Length: 404
Ligand code: ADP
Image (cartoon, rainbow, N blue to C red; front, side, top):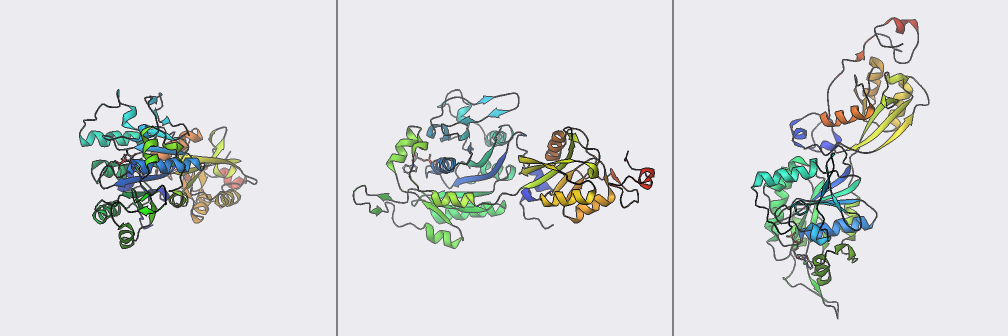
C-alpha cells in the first residue's frame, strides 16, 4: 500500500510509525488538533480555549494539552489553581468547571509564577510526557496549544503525537503572509494537514452603531488563504468582555458564537478507526477461531481503544465467522489457532490475521497496540484439509492441528 503518512489507517511497521510515542494505555482520544502561531500574543491560547469551550458546550468531551511550557496561560483562563494529581497508573489532567480536561506545566510548578528555565530538549521531553504519561480518557477533541514559532516543541509534537491537523492563528498586524507560509511549509514537511486559519483581533465592533472598524488596517487573511488554498475558519473581534473573562478565569462563561462554523469543520473531520477483533471465551482468547461463539470487536484510534462491542456468532465455522467479522468492518483479527483456509478467507476479505495469541483478550490487545504489528503466522495450521476449521470429521482429527 502506498504510504499516505497517516499511521492511523495503516498497520505497516515502519520508521515513521516508530517515531510516534505510544499514548498512555488508558487514554482514548479521537481527534487531535494543534493550534499554532508565528509569534506570541496573537491569541493562540485564547483560540485554543474557545475551541475547547465551544465543542464541550456542544456535548463533546474536550481536552487541552498545553505545550506552551514556558508561557502557559491555559489554566489561568479556566480559573484552575489546583496542582495536577497522579495515581500509580499515571498523571491525571485537571478538570474545568464544564468538564474540559487540562494538562499544563503550570499545574506541576510549586508556584505558578515560577519561571520554567529549562533547555529545549527538557521542554520537548515534558511535552512528550504530557502525551505518554497523562491519562486522557474519553476525549473527542484534544487541542494542543503550541508555543509560537517552528522550534523544538512543535517539531516534537508533530513527530511524536498523531496530530490530525493544525490551525494557524494570526492577527492582522502580523506579517501574515510569511507566518502562514512558514507554518504551511513545516506542516507539509511533517505530512500534517493545515485545517485553516483563524484571524484574531480582526476588528472592533462599535458598541453603539455596531460598525466594524479594522483597527490594524484592511485584513490580508483572505488573500493569503486563497494563495495557499486554505480556509479562513473564523475572524474574531477584539472583545473586551472576552479579555476580562479570560483574566478572571471564566472563559467558559463566554457565549458569543464567533467560532460556530470553525467548530463544524472540526466536527466533520474524519476519524480513522481500526476495528480489531478477538475471539473470546471467559475473557481469554478462544483457542480456535472457527469455533468461537463470541468475538470482541475493539475500535482503535491512533493506537488507543475508544470503544468496543461484543459480537455473538450465530453460526460456527469459518465462513460464517468471517462474514460476521466483515459485516462489523473488522480490519485485524488477533487469535490463537486458525486454519489455513480460514486465514486465507480473512485475508481475501481484507482482514489481517495475527495468530498464536494466548492469554486474556485485553492483554493480547494491549500488547498488540504496544507493538502494533508482529508478523507471527507460526500457528496457522496447514493440515491440507479444506474444512479444517469447523469440521469434526476423522480426516481433520487425524491431521496435525489442535482440534479436540
Ligand atoms: P498567545 O497564546 O498567542 O500568546 P493569548 O491567547 O495568551 O496569546 O492572548 C494574549 C492576551 O490577549 C490575553 O490577555 C488575551 O486575553 C488577549 N486577547 C487575545 N485575543 C483577544 C481578543 N480577540 N479580544 C480581547 N482580548 C484578546
